[in-house]
Image (cartoon, rainbow, N blue to C red; front, side, top):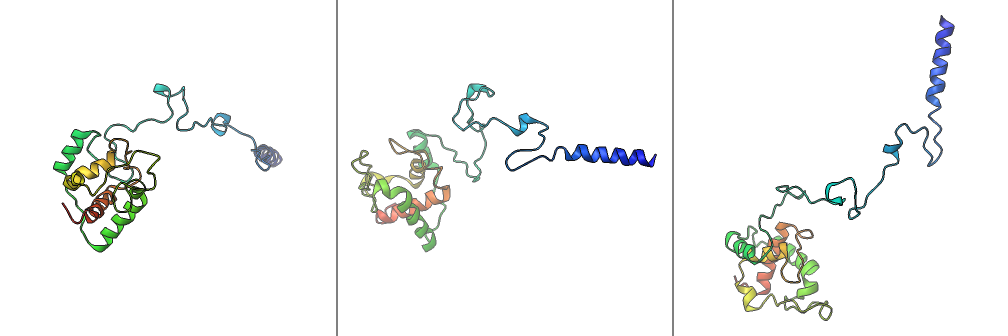
Length: 184
């Protein structure tokens, strides 16, 4: 009986070690090859498995971005006007906030609008000139309207919500008001 157990244990050990044939990049015994050799899809690849045939899906309605910032205003001039009426700048004008607004403006906005907001950034000649941010019309826009433009885009300006956090958009507005000479 003891010999039978010893033989059974040896056979079990031999069976278990037979799966340990891995060498370098070669796997040992693959139990579920469909899981090991999965078919990857890139974001914009067609995908026959999903409804609509697209790999990249839009998030379900009502979901909040990972940053936790939902911007409740849709695209378009009506929504921009509504944002201008309903939103006010929650940021303070302390030195650190103003410095951050200037930094974000210089990194994201100045390439088109120029360092002083005159619409003379280095892209001039490749794209139509953007409007001056110090002109009378820009001075009269409410802060919420400007944040909407940064968030959703306007004309040929693309939305920048993916690149600039909501708090930084408000800080950019504070910097813009400094460029405008403090006009509200």
